[in-house]
Length: 394
Image (cartoon, rainbow, N blue to C red; front, side, top):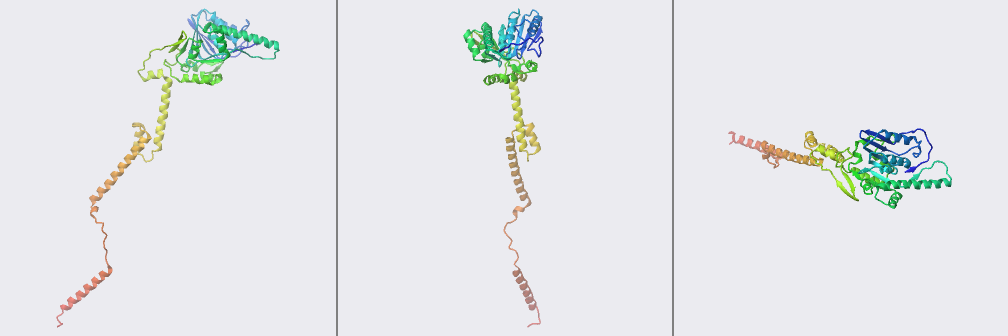
């Protein structure tokens, strides 16, 4: 939240930080990016201020003007000028913080008759500061101190119109540079209700630009949000929304009399499509985990595929999916059964061939000396028998 003293430029250069959209009876004012100007918005000759007022007046009479804010703040004079223009407009002004509403941007939010914030939206208030360019004497600096004090009083006035707090309490909040996420902004009085659909669920936010460049809530978090606040916002971003994604009007948390009351819509989920619609992030997370697990299962099976029949592998992978451990155990059992069947077959074959009746007692073999003696005896006996038959002997 800064104040600046700069000369006139005649024409504005660079992208606008605002955009008006005419929707018939209603209109939308988008405040995206740094609220800035190269000119003093308190000067009637300010081209930027005149452009803003001309666009606002060009809308004509509207019943409602919806202000959508995604801004880290900027020039407090410009913010005060926008605040005044909105407060004096005949339309009912509603405000929605879709990402960050910090510093000078909170002044514009205070111009709204009703104010909402995304469940992971961020709001921040602090003291104004002055950006100096050039050289100054002590008297000039003392005047700047007075200007800064007056600027702070103007901010306090805007806050006190909406917050149920004393001036001292608000001063302390600004002195401490206070950060609020979602429901905390409601509890502090800056907003009336919480939009349960996180800003990451809104498809519109994937297309918006800030100061002429594409932007998202994520890179806004990385820019200047303190680590503890960033963690809190991210934690809320990870929780699934109960409402339809892409909408900024589902479950709300309203502040009534300092207490929070949940006004939730009933929702029945009867099929996968309904589950995906209600919990898109959770479903995406489940799908991603399932894909990773399946890839790991197939990889593990490939590692033990050697020696396993192709048909068994295909069945284990796709037809009747099993884990690698279960497949290995089943294959070991199959191998053991096959081994037992092989041994049983060998035994049956031996019995059928008669080989089982063959004695295992060793053969004595043939003694060469005994054979020679037997042959000699046979010759002697033959000779003796021949002599007995010879009649010539008496």
